[in-house]
Image (cartoon, rainbow, N blue to C red; front, side):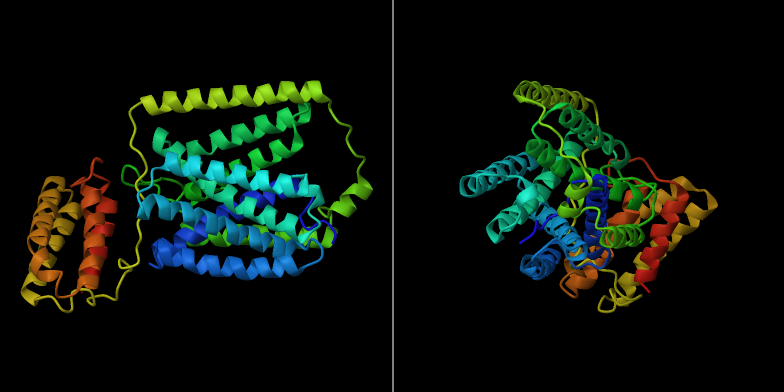
Length: 409
């Protein structure tokens, strides 16, 4: 076989970040907006990953479309595995980071013992390609764990969080240009592109105003962000397919091989990696010591999907629904008129009544109750009730109250 992976050019890194971003946004859209849920989404993408990987492994050379489709799918799959450990099984992120680090070291160790090389310029056999994709899967899971752990430690917003992996990738590139080991440099940068792309996706998709612990951004939404980046990926793949500029054989025929930098420079660069790790640790320790709110866990919205207007309360006693609707309408009216105190008081009464009726309403329709409860929590969050954030602008309060009234019919 010819080399089954692309040459590492600037296009490689551009499309890698694009794939990571769309993977993050598309997974969030399926889980959060469609209400499929983390576990179900993970099962879906595991099956899709198996399918596209079979197609990729059957090829005899690198072809841009199936290769980058596999990268997109594996980016989602690896991310979901970490999210399930964190949000479903309550595994601390530092443990996930440590476990995936050890697992990646094992993959590289077995790969080296069997093939005597970790170079991506010689992925020309089925065993080497299998090791390659296993390593890619683990790097995405590891990148997710370390990236989320960084957000947990610092409380940074996605916009600010972009700067850390971007700075580290630039530093690694400079050390590689100086003489650092190219294989080590490649895989370190590969891991870091995951939190870089994910933070870009969260920054673009997240609302401009959110509760503490939830990301804020440009409010493009996960669906729009996914479409934009899918379009960019498709355009890049078409360009690479036509030019074949990232095919190893084409690249080698048009570029002069670079001479080795020497063992001395490689050792100095390795020390540079150590200093970079120490500096990063010091920065995270400093950020962690400052007051901040950590990110909220990613919810599994399998049962919280929005139902048709009035459907969620169809099995509830009409008198109880009317009482809830009256309080929500009162809060909405006061919010529109500028009576912030009255709007909050009505929202507080709404919460108290809803909680008092839980034991009688939830057994009647658990799915309907969960749907209303999820929207009720959004309403309370805009007022800072049962949440640590200050009250949000009246426009946000009106939006969530209107959504709640729509749900109640």
